[in-house]
Length: 220
Image (cartoon, rainbow, N blue to C red; front, top):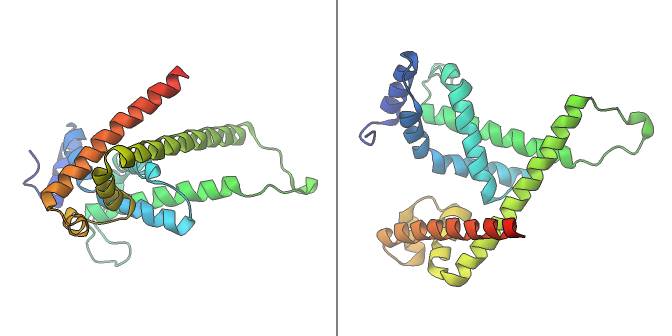
């Protein structure tokens, strides 16, 4: 129902509903769906700069950014560019900046967590209970993310074996940062419609394979 609205018009709808106490989930979800692909692209750029991360991180960081956009971003957006004062800023640019900061904070924490501890006993400081709790939570999340990444690549390997054409399209579209289906189709020498179909089928297969792997892990 929002397909005919521009980003600015749809964002105005979100703000109007919010101001009147209405539900913003549907228009905001539609708006963020439009920005999902560029948001994941931003995450891959941050991953490259920190030399770590995987495709599995992108979805989680995107969802974190959506949550921050809803919790605080809607109140903070002023429509003015931070880089060029006096110029207007689009809600999309504002959201992608949130994605960027979420990804930077995430990988910066990872780098700090992986930094070697001091061997000098005089420099060792006792951690507070809150710091210990945060460290344990961070460790738990890293383990869960590592397991999720391993499952993803196992599922993708199965996709390559059972449906190589779909795997090839998925690899271009999600692993190699090919920006659109036209370019994906050109590289694969297929039609744009077939590019959409292959990527869509690949996504469905991966979901099925991941579910199978999760069930196998539960039985173990």
